[in-house]
Image 1 (cartoon, rainbow, N blue to C red):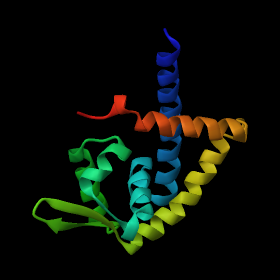
Image 2: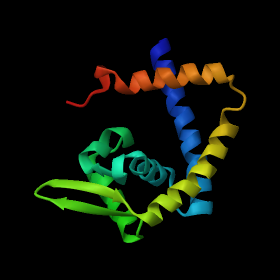
Image 3: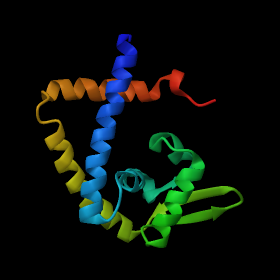
Length: 143
């Protein structure tokens, strides 16, 4: 196996382990999954707490149909609302969603801090920069 494939498989294993732990803890303490947290966090960071639904696809790593199903569930429990017409739909964070994501962020930060405590801060910064570059590479662009 070459170095690049090994890196991608190690990245997958690390992501899978982290996702399982975050799903468990966020579910116990806040009633949401890590995927829900990621979506709510994107909305919380967006201008006005709103993002067009197609713009959520790439950062969430899910097809638009999956994002839409996730939004419908979050809308039913009052965390988001879908707005718009004529094919331009946006997801909008509601006050209850903002409060929940802010509380859940503390839980996620605590778990992530524990998860990387054995890694030097400089190595975390380099790995983070490398992952941002990887996510933006044209090779991974959808056609």
